[in-house]
Image (tube, rainbow, N blue to C red; front, top):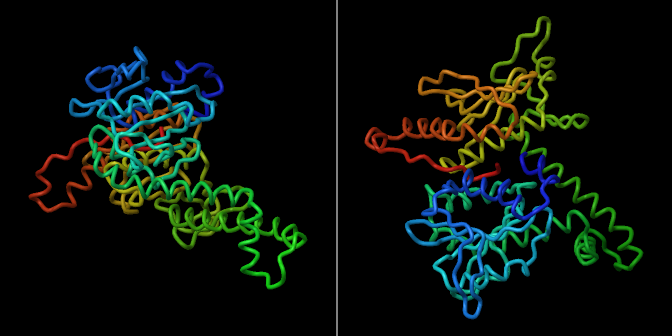
Length: 378
């Protein structure tokens, strides 16, 4: 991932904007950062006695400023104190969305609590170090091609509280507080909950939480990468599948032995997540499936072999991205890093768009399909 690879070498706010924020606006949201009709850098709007203050970026859609972006240096934690200019500008522009970011974490704000006044808490928090896939469809609504402000605002209230609840739950699962330990202990222990009992159950609650999360992750990986008959190797962390799309032929090896030769790497999973993020503006992320084989990692629409989106040829010294034309003929494109997949985002989106078009009735198929912008991790 580009952020993980380069963030330690970024030492200034300006470098953060150039390395991470501008590519986010361009690659993920789909706006031309060099076109002032779409993105205005150093946007100025005089606020009361404040003159000449600038906001880092104003994103324009249909001739109106719709999104304000304030950037801070990467590795600096985001605090509401960093958003003072966003608060002031929010009240004097048409923007309904404000974004505070350090290049890795993006906090999205609106005015749910009071009209034309930016909320103190974000309704959506996107962290590229730990992407929540459920947020990608909402992010897609802010892209140039799929901009739908009304839908974003209507969903913001629910997103705001669900996001906060999930973060609280994550914190409790990681390091449970006394009240959380007491609450869960009272459901399984019938005696008085003394301090000694709390001390005893604290590690048990933490251990149970970790095991529960591991089981949930295991189930999701099995469903995404191989179905209910696959399993996760505890020693390697890889997903092993008993049946593969196109297993390599191994002389003298049976099906079980062939399956054991398949090792899904973290790099392949990262490539899969990138492809899914790119095309999720075209289809829901749940429709993007993955199948690993001994020779390549396949990405499919609707888990259908006849609808290949991409193949990741990473099990070799030279990496290749396999893409498909209208006749489903594969072309292998050399790439240096996993992030290079983003250079072929249009091709991947067009591939999915073709499958969607052919699946519609003839009358609907005649309608042009607009290219959608990436709405996920980059």
